[in-house]
Image (cartoon, rainbow, N blue to C red; front, side):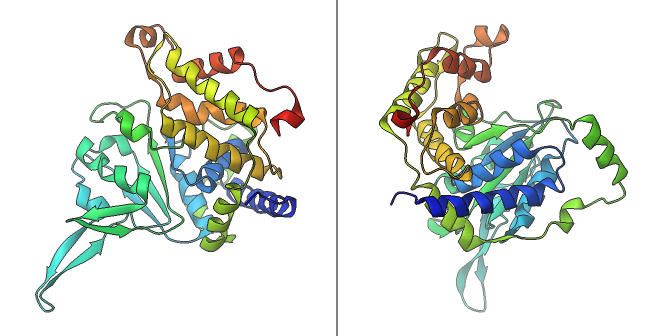
Length: 324
């Protein structure tokens, strides 16, 4: 069912309230906060890659506190086992049957801190649950519930003792972004409040899990015209045809972009997607899915640069009515 204008207005007001709530703790990073909530309302997962101490964990914890749901934090380390994430089946001698003990993955918001420090075997424990929303242990599937979102963090430096995320894992993150250092004025505010060690602890919940689920469903009713779909498809094809890429954006990436721009348009109070929505989100949704040719990577080519080229060279629909 197509999104009605009054529903879009409610969606926008609620989205703005969510962003404002977290922005009171993560200062000067409204654009990153908007991307984070867009990822959640598109039913996806987020990868935050940035230097240490920029507020990645603070953002994830503040967002989790904004929801009236459960949240957990998993500190990924080289000795972490898959069962430490998903849970384990234990034999109950009194009842004489096996009982499943849920792991920390069974939460509304899961913070996977420094995900690239765990072994590939442990990282793979997230593949099924991020894609299908369930965990299979000893042949039995267990649903994690809805809403469900993984916010993973990793540092682009300190690579000793880390395991690079494989393409299959990266492809399951709807968006990848970074926070960056705060501007001068916000840095002063952060330092002035440095006595408060857990600022995210004062964030109050402003939305229920049921409301989040409703917003996810409403975003699915945002209209994408044939012209905008054609534009999105051509951008994706550009990444596949680029001489600098060994592997372009996957089909999953295209589906993720469609979900993300719907949620973004609704957060702007619109019932339809514009090409500008695609241009805004394409770098965060598509760039991390591109496998760069080794020679091109040595020359400084990145996924972000290929997306920039695609946006510059692929013509977008010009007629607003046609795009809508």
